[in-house]
Amino acid sequence: MQSDISKEILEQIPTPCWLLEEKLLRRNLEILKNIKDKTGVKILLALKGYALWKSFDLVREYLDGCCASGLNEALLAKEEFKKEVHTYSPAFKEEEIEKIAQISNHLVFNSINQLKKFTKKAKEVNKDISLGLRVNPGISAAPVELYNPCAPYSRLGVTKDNFDESVLEVIDGLHFHALCEEDASSLEVVLKAFIEKFGKYFDKLKWVNFGGGHHITKKGYNKEFLIRLLRDFKAQYPHLQIYLEPGEAVGWESGVLIASVLDIVENGMKIAILDISAEAHMPDTIIMPYRAEVRGAKEPNLLPYTYRLGGNTCLSGDIMGDYSFSKPLQIGDKIIFEDQMHYTMVKATTFNGINLPSIAILKEDKAIEIIRKFGYEDFKNRLS
Ligand SMILES: *Cc1c(COP(=O)(O)O)cnc(C)c1O
Image (cartoon, rainbow, N blue to C red; front, side):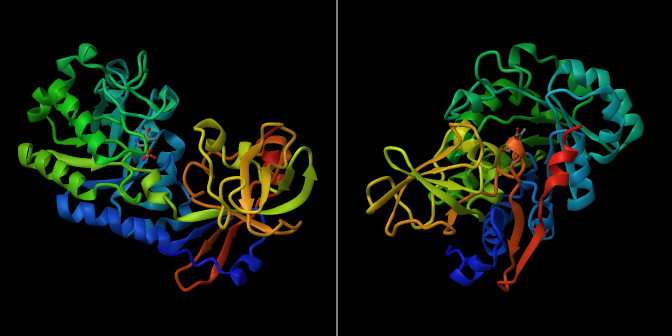
């Protein structure tokens, strides 16, 4: 789907700025809703990847709730999403479990130890709470080890060997999360292992949660295959409610990060310094790593004018990459980084005192709402 960011709109945007396009978000949500309608699964938004809560009025029309990774995300889900709250954490803290249990519909533990430790308290403060356990299906097709929850020595989820059948008396569901930006064919592999290892317990359960990492809204994702897998599972285990909890697929290609060129320097090549930072604002470009697309630009040397784009921090490696343009860049030009809604604002820092980008929404009627600007106080308040 085409972006609506015109030259006029671009002129109105102060930089740096994350700009969500409501129309593109709705497109993703419609795809996800279609999967729900065709299969009966429930889909939750994973706040870890996308938490632009001023857009939740729209997301709420389509999805069933949020999955939270702890107290803060659970509170945000409760306050701003106002539907189901599913909370999982690698380890819950004693002093937070009561509050978390009060506001969560599902509480998923990472270990049998934690499940046993907190079951009584959780049920005491919320008699309707549904408890679950995260298991490790032992197989994942994650592209890099950093994103592989089933890698050797993974701390995430209980393995088959460590599973203790006595927990079946308290849990209603099993959860796995083993995918990262993957197609339905990866889910097929993981699902097979999940059923082989844990299927014998399914008759004691009410729900299963297939985690996130389903790249459903990406072009080329095999949605028909996903629908088939989910329907087959449902046919085999009709008593189980299936949940999916994508983060990335919700925010996928729904907005951009807009920067301005502050200066252009030369050192063997032309280098443009922008008013953003790869390290602070687009950390996955360094961690994952991946190359963010720049609107109108190509790989170096494909177009006549090649520049290295760098950030405005003192970190030498704060570099977005090398890009070529059809016209020479000028100081003041705006640079649009594509697909910057997920795993960006939730991870951003004020490293080096650099300002966080503003957050804006391009509404479906093309009105622009600048919903948040950051300044010195935000920098100062994270420190003391
Ligand atoms: C990260 C995570 C998700 C969301 O993953 P995406 O890759 O953003 O879809 C869902 N569930 C759990 C447990 C996670 O850790």
